Length: 234
Image (cartoon, one colour):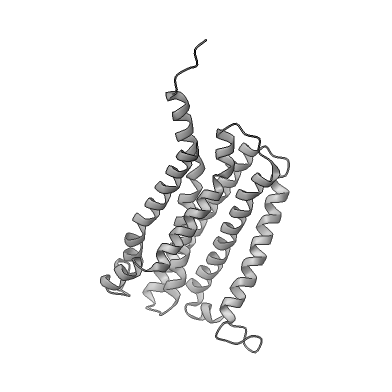
Protein backbone atom coordinates (compact mmCIF):
# COMPACT_ATOMS: atom_id res chain seq x y z
CA UNK A 1 0.00 0.00 0.00
CA UNK A 2 2.93 2.34 0.58
CA UNK A 3 3.74 2.06 -3.11
CA UNK A 4 0.27 3.30 -4.04
CA UNK A 5 0.58 6.08 -1.49
CA UNK A 6 3.78 7.13 -3.26
CA UNK A 7 1.94 7.03 -6.61
CA UNK A 8 -0.80 9.23 -5.15
CA UNK A 9 1.72 11.79 -3.89
CA UNK A 10 3.53 11.75 -7.23
CA UNK A 11 0.30 12.34 -9.16
CA UNK A 12 -0.56 15.18 -6.79
CA UNK A 13 2.84 16.84 -7.26
CA UNK A 14 2.62 16.46 -11.05
CA UNK A 15 -0.88 17.93 -11.15
CA UNK A 16 0.25 20.85 -9.01
CA UNK A 17 3.32 21.42 -11.19
CA UNK A 18 1.20 21.31 -14.35
CA UNK A 19 -1.04 24.08 -12.99
CA UNK A 20 1.81 26.43 -12.04
CA UNK A 21 2.45 28.09 -15.40
CA UNK A 22 -1.20 28.35 -16.60
CA UNK A 23 -2.26 29.80 -13.24
CA UNK A 24 0.56 32.35 -13.24
CA UNK A 25 -0.14 33.34 -16.84
CA UNK A 26 -3.85 33.73 -16.09
CA UNK A 27 -3.17 35.74 -12.94
CA UNK A 28 -0.54 38.13 -14.25
CA UNK A 29 -0.86 38.18 -18.05
CA UNK A 30 -4.31 37.13 -19.24
CA UNK A 31 -6.52 38.84 -16.63
CA UNK A 32 -6.85 42.58 -17.19
CA UNK A 33 -3.81 44.65 -18.09
CA UNK A 34 -0.63 42.50 -18.26
CA UNK A 35 1.35 42.94 -15.06
CA UNK A 36 4.48 41.06 -16.19
CA UNK A 37 5.79 39.89 -19.57
CA UNK A 38 5.20 36.22 -20.31
CA UNK A 39 8.97 35.62 -20.12
CA UNK A 40 9.06 36.94 -16.55
CA UNK A 41 6.12 34.71 -15.63
CA UNK A 42 7.93 31.71 -17.09
CA UNK A 43 11.04 32.60 -15.08
CA UNK A 44 8.96 32.86 -11.91
CA UNK A 45 7.37 29.46 -12.62
CA UNK A 46 10.86 27.94 -12.79
CA UNK A 47 12.07 29.72 -9.65
CA UNK A 48 13.26 27.55 -6.75
CA UNK A 49 10.59 29.09 -4.49
CA UNK A 50 7.84 27.67 -6.69
CA UNK A 51 9.31 24.18 -6.50
CA UNK A 52 9.81 24.56 -2.75
CA UNK A 53 6.07 25.29 -2.45
CA UNK A 54 5.30 22.12 -4.44
CA UNK A 55 7.73 20.07 -2.32
CA UNK A 56 6.15 21.32 0.93
CA UNK A 57 2.68 20.59 -0.46
CA UNK A 58 3.78 17.07 -1.42
CA UNK A 59 5.11 16.56 2.11
CA UNK A 60 1.73 17.65 3.46
CA UNK A 61 0.06 15.09 1.21
CA UNK A 62 2.39 12.39 2.56
CA UNK A 63 1.46 13.24 6.15
CA UNK A 64 -2.26 13.21 5.33
CA UNK A 65 -1.91 9.68 3.93
CA UNK A 66 -0.39 8.20 7.11
CA UNK A 67 -3.76 7.11 8.50
CA UNK A 68 -5.28 5.93 5.16
CA UNK A 69 -2.23 3.71 4.56
CA UNK A 70 -2.59 2.18 8.03
CA UNK A 71 -6.29 1.60 7.45
CA UNK A 72 -5.66 -0.05 4.07
CA UNK A 73 -3.11 -2.37 5.69
CA UNK A 74 -5.59 -3.20 8.48
CA UNK A 75 -3.23 -1.92 11.17
CA UNK A 76 -4.51 -0.41 14.43
CA UNK A 77 -4.61 3.38 14.37
CA UNK A 78 -3.26 4.78 17.62
CA UNK A 79 -3.55 8.33 18.89
CA UNK A 80 -0.03 9.26 17.79
CA UNK A 81 -0.61 8.08 14.24
CA UNK A 82 -4.01 9.80 14.11
CA UNK A 83 -2.47 13.03 15.40
CA UNK A 84 -0.19 13.32 12.34
CA UNK A 85 -2.87 14.20 9.75
CA UNK A 86 -4.75 16.38 12.23
CA UNK A 87 -1.70 18.46 13.10
CA UNK A 88 -0.89 18.70 9.39
CA UNK A 89 -4.44 19.72 8.46
CA UNK A 90 -4.44 22.32 11.25
CA UNK A 91 -1.24 23.82 9.81
CA UNK A 92 -2.68 23.81 6.28
CA UNK A 93 -5.92 25.45 7.36
CA UNK A 94 -3.95 28.00 9.37
CA UNK A 95 -2.11 28.86 6.14
CA UNK A 96 -5.44 29.07 4.36
CA UNK A 97 -6.79 31.40 7.07
CA UNK A 98 -3.79 33.73 6.77
CA UNK A 99 -3.95 33.85 2.98
CA UNK A 100 -7.71 34.42 3.14
CA UNK A 101 -7.25 37.41 5.45
CA UNK A 102 -4.42 38.82 3.31
CA UNK A 103 -6.41 38.30 0.10
CA UNK A 104 -9.53 39.98 1.48
CA UNK A 105 -7.52 42.86 2.90
CA UNK A 106 -5.69 43.50 -0.37
CA UNK A 107 -8.87 43.09 -2.39
CA UNK A 108 -10.60 45.79 -0.35
CA UNK A 109 -7.74 48.12 0.60
CA UNK A 110 -5.22 47.42 -2.16
CA UNK A 111 -1.57 47.94 -1.32
CA UNK A 112 -2.63 49.52 1.98
CA UNK A 113 -3.80 46.08 3.05
CA UNK A 114 -0.19 44.92 3.08
CA UNK A 115 1.00 48.04 4.87
CA UNK A 116 -1.48 47.32 7.64
CA UNK A 117 0.73 44.42 8.74
CA UNK A 118 3.45 46.81 9.91
CA UNK A 119 3.44 47.39 13.66
CA UNK A 120 4.72 50.94 13.62
CA UNK A 121 6.70 51.77 16.71
CA UNK A 122 6.53 48.22 18.11
CA UNK A 123 8.95 46.23 15.97
CA UNK A 124 11.28 47.34 13.13
CA UNK A 125 9.29 48.00 9.97
CA UNK A 126 11.62 45.84 7.84
CA UNK A 127 10.51 42.59 9.44
CA UNK A 128 7.26 43.62 11.13
CA UNK A 129 5.02 41.87 8.50
CA UNK A 130 6.94 38.59 8.90
CA UNK A 131 6.72 38.85 12.69
CA UNK A 132 2.97 39.43 12.52
CA UNK A 133 2.51 36.56 10.05
CA UNK A 134 4.42 34.20 12.33
CA UNK A 135 2.37 35.17 15.38
CA UNK A 136 -0.90 34.90 13.47
CA UNK A 137 0.16 31.54 12.00
CA UNK A 138 0.84 30.11 15.46
CA UNK A 139 -2.47 31.43 16.77
CA UNK A 140 -4.41 30.05 13.79
CA UNK A 141 -2.61 26.70 14.02
CA UNK A 142 -3.45 26.40 17.71
CA UNK A 143 -7.06 27.43 17.07
CA UNK A 144 -7.58 24.84 14.33
CA UNK A 145 -5.89 22.19 16.45
CA UNK A 146 -8.27 22.92 19.33
CA UNK A 147 -11.28 22.82 16.97
CA UNK A 148 -10.22 19.44 15.59
CA UNK A 149 -9.63 18.06 19.07
CA UNK A 150 -13.12 19.13 20.17
CA UNK A 151 -14.94 18.05 17.02
CA UNK A 152 -13.25 14.73 16.25
CA UNK A 153 -12.47 13.40 19.72
CA UNK A 154 -13.77 9.85 20.00
CA UNK A 155 -14.56 9.60 16.27
CA UNK A 156 -13.38 6.49 14.43
CA UNK A 157 -10.36 7.12 12.15
CA UNK A 158 -12.19 6.59 8.84
CA UNK A 159 -15.02 9.01 9.66
CA UNK A 160 -12.54 11.50 11.09
CA UNK A 161 -10.43 11.48 7.93
CA UNK A 162 -13.48 11.83 5.69
CA UNK A 163 -14.74 14.81 7.66
CA UNK A 164 -11.27 16.33 7.79
CA UNK A 165 -10.88 16.17 4.01
CA UNK A 166 -14.38 17.61 3.62
CA UNK A 167 -13.38 20.57 5.76
CA UNK A 168 -10.26 21.11 3.67
CA UNK A 169 -12.21 20.91 0.41
CA UNK A 170 -14.88 23.34 1.55
CA UNK A 171 -12.24 25.71 2.93
CA UNK A 172 -10.32 25.68 -0.35
CA UNK A 173 -13.50 26.35 -2.35
CA UNK A 174 -14.33 29.27 -0.07
CA UNK A 175 -10.79 30.57 -0.50
CA UNK A 176 -11.06 30.48 -4.30
CA UNK A 177 -14.49 32.11 -4.28
CA UNK A 178 -12.98 35.05 -2.41
CA UNK A 179 -9.50 35.09 -3.99
CA UNK A 180 -10.62 35.15 -7.64
CA UNK A 181 -12.73 38.34 -7.49
CA UNK A 182 -10.21 40.00 -5.13
CA UNK A 183 -7.43 39.27 -7.60
CA UNK A 184 -9.46 40.63 -10.52
CA UNK A 185 -10.15 43.83 -8.57
CA UNK A 186 -6.50 44.20 -7.56
CA UNK A 187 -5.31 43.62 -11.14
CA UNK A 188 -7.70 46.23 -12.55
CA UNK A 189 -6.30 48.76 -10.09
CA UNK A 190 -2.81 48.20 -11.57
CA UNK A 191 -1.32 48.07 -8.07
CA UNK A 192 2.16 46.90 -7.18
CA UNK A 193 1.94 44.33 -4.38
CA UNK A 194 -1.76 43.61 -3.84
CA UNK A 195 -2.04 41.24 -6.85
CA UNK A 196 0.85 39.19 -5.44
CA UNK A 197 -1.02 38.78 -2.15
CA UNK A 198 -4.27 37.82 -3.88
CA UNK A 199 -2.33 35.36 -6.05
CA UNK A 200 -1.14 33.76 -2.80
CA UNK A 201 -4.80 33.13 -2.02
CA UNK A 202 -5.31 31.53 -5.44
CA UNK A 203 -2.24 29.30 -5.01
CA UNK A 204 -3.27 28.24 -1.51
CA UNK A 205 -6.83 27.44 -2.57
CA UNK A 206 -5.73 25.31 -5.52
CA UNK A 207 -3.07 23.53 -3.45
CA UNK A 208 -5.46 22.56 -0.67
CA UNK A 209 -8.25 21.60 -3.07
CA UNK A 210 -6.06 19.10 -4.89
CA UNK A 211 -4.61 17.86 -1.60
CA UNK A 212 -8.04 17.12 -0.16
CA UNK A 213 -8.61 14.53 -2.91
CA UNK A 214 -5.41 12.62 -2.05
CA UNK A 215 -6.82 10.14 0.51
CA UNK A 216 -9.80 9.43 -1.74
CA UNK A 217 -7.54 8.70 -4.71
CA UNK A 218 -5.40 6.43 -2.54
CA UNK A 219 -8.43 4.42 -1.38
CA UNK A 220 -9.48 3.99 -5.03
CA UNK A 221 -6.05 2.50 -5.76
CA UNK A 222 -6.29 0.29 -2.67
CA UNK A 223 -9.77 -1.01 -3.55
CA UNK A 224 -8.68 -1.70 -7.11
CA UNK A 225 -5.69 -3.70 -5.94
CA UNK A 226 -7.86 -5.78 -3.60
CA UNK A 227 -10.15 -6.68 -6.51
CA UNK A 228 -7.25 -7.65 -8.74
CA UNK A 229 -5.65 -9.94 -6.18
CA UNK A 230 -6.55 -13.61 -6.69
CA UNK A 231 -8.79 -15.06 -4.04
CA UNK A 232 -7.02 -17.40 -1.57
CA UNK A 233 -7.47 -21.08 -2.30
CA UNK A 234 -9.45 -23.17 0.15
